[in-house]
Length: 95
Length: 521
Image (cartoon, rainbow over all chains, first blue to last red; front, top):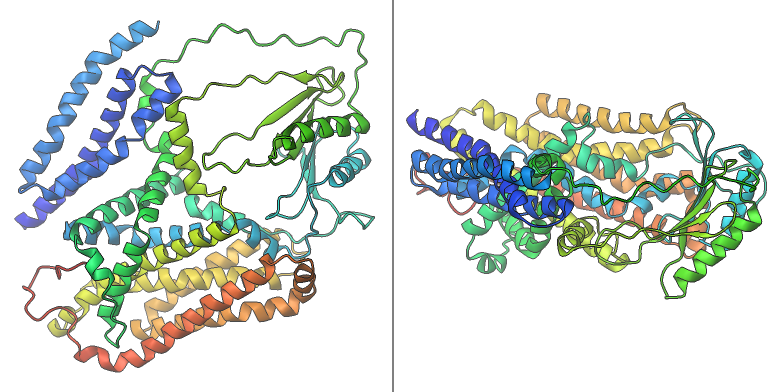
């Protein structure tokens, strides 16, 4: 039962956490790249799928489900903080 | 990692299989359309065809606001004209041109989706927008994950590659087939799954675009509408359009490139009338908008096109995009892609079947087959054989439905869906091994019967195309015949194997009770 719970938890970390990580990484990259808008969006989104894949692999490689969550949740929090800090700066610069 | 490979492969494996098969067919979508519309006259992209198209438009739609002529390429064969008389879709009409030496009305060409059906199904799966694209994206992501975890599971795959055991042992053969097809075209699989994600990334990862502020406009006001002044309100006449065609054609073909593909005359009968030409693909790998030349429709002067500077990121993106669509591929390379697509389909199918083979004996010896296993076995069959039954039904319907049927193109698609549904019902009421045999035999019958059906219903067109040195029609017949033969062989093999199977051990005897067999799963 506990093992099944662990697997379900890993799936949640892989799909939900992995997607959040991919989405946030694309946003941070788009905000930091100094490229024309359209190019910045492409350059930021294309690698995000690889980050998604890496997160899923991590979710099932980590020794425990807790570690799986930590390895994905940590970067998610850092990137979220970066977006929170960067977004007003970039918008202010654009106006 | 074995675990990840097993489950990412299984969960959307059925969807993935359908996407792989229809995507493989899409490499030949124009050829499939030609087979499905055998009465379509063949033209060449010449000045004469352009002239005939314009004359036809002048005759049937002199008042239309927009006109277009589309010249054929070597693959699609037919030229068509379109015009817009009223607003919206209702105002849009399209017609195929009759063959050049014939006079009279346009030929009656049967209504069909043709190869377009496979193209659309490949990423929309007949689901309402946008859910088909989301599901296809999820399948692409799972495929990408299954590939990565499969590579890690199989670090010594080159060794495995050289061990193909084709004996009577079903699971071993299936496993070897899975490994061989995986290794043979691995870069291709990685490429198509990743590029599939990139093509629709604005849907799958729209966040970067949402967050970035809009760019300030570069300060160029929209070009002022040129007033007609003393110019009469009128339309470019045929002689003028043909002269502009010559100009566009020679400016493009001067550099040894391909010439004009499309003509569009817009804002006819207004002071803003314009004439625009676009060009055939220039053969590069990257996806790009076709080059365009625009002229003022009253004076015939060239209108300057603004060209956007392209950065390296756009270039990389367009190459990834273009590689997926493979428009650049000539016929040799196109067959190569087709074969790799078939191998990919075999890869997914064998992977799905392996999942059940690995677990079958365990359940048989335990005397109880869990519902999950029952379901997977049936979904495998209904997807793998069922899809081919559905495709076979689509092609048969294309030849057998009367040409006058209203909504004929939709009927063909309905036949596809009903046949697939029937296959699904069939597996629910039959023992699974028998159902495999019966469905494979049906696939064999449908596919190997197609050339015969074609000879009876469209034999004159087939002969005509071969006399004209066009092999697409005949190649289609050969290809479906081969597919039918493969289905026969599979059915025969399955019949022979049935006796032997129970005594063979499907999982290794030493395998621990609850762990999936560890070579691959």
